[in-house]
Length: 377
Ligand code: XIL
Image (cartoon, rainbow, N blue to C red; front, top):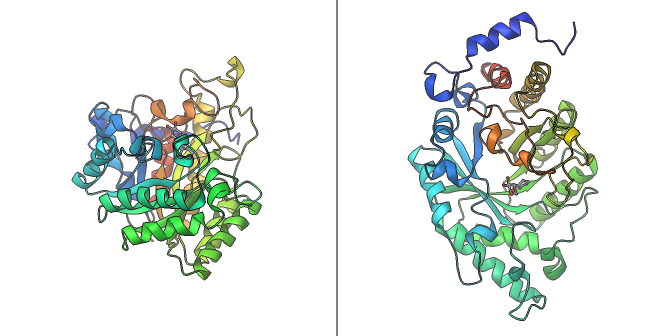
């Protein structure tokens, strides 16, 4: 059988699942029910969803998800744009949306090298800050934000993307100015601010062995220093041919072996031609748009739609099989139209990485995923 041609049974199953917008389907299968006994399931939300500007997306989130993560609004540049100014409008909205809908709210992210203003690392004269002052600034930031949402944000991505692909520590400004204990200190500050909160290390391409080994060493080191770290987030910015299901399984098992809760925190599937060869989500890696890099500006062809469904299903079979170790699977977005992958690593393309299409309709991948979850634990 040609694997690129959907089987008749598959097509019928897709028809039964329905293609209408979520808003019209009372009988639509529900992700959070399908995985209810396995793990939480959710999405990253931008402010439009929360602020009422994208009501169809909000409805879809309310119907399908039981956990949410802010896609941007808790990042340093947005929540703390100037030294003496925090802006909590959008983050308060997101947390209130989560509470209203009894969803688990995740905080993303406290310490990262991207979407962090330059002033954070400089003194008033534009000179690099000294270690102690930067630690104090980090402490203030973490205490202010984690303190504000104490008891309402259940878990925090405390440190995001601290590792290079070879598993060594990334030479981020945090690292250069403070030194490698910036990571331990960030976790310590977060723990002080909310002793009950779960605290995570979050990164991409931990499925690759060298980087995974770096992260395992990092977790072991924090544990040996008695620093509270409760989980590891695998971002899950995946490609059609990377990582393999076995790589994902090995990675989940490795972190769980250290007593970590494991989460898939930013799941999406890039279906477009990749001009970079990069396995992961490094924002600094970019390429110019060319016609041939943007082949599916209309509908995704059936063959690829089917391949995407199969790809999602093979990953979710691993997630369900590992569900005693996996506490959450969060998609990085809600529906294709507003996915960040329309603009990274190439700006202005039409990508199709999620379970819901540009019209909020479930794609074949949605049903394929649902089917992996119906088996009881
Ligand atoms: C992305 C957002 O989706 C975009 O809207 C923003 O312009 C850049 O950041 N890893 C992460 C996320 O941890 O915070 C990033 O989110 C994607 C890669």
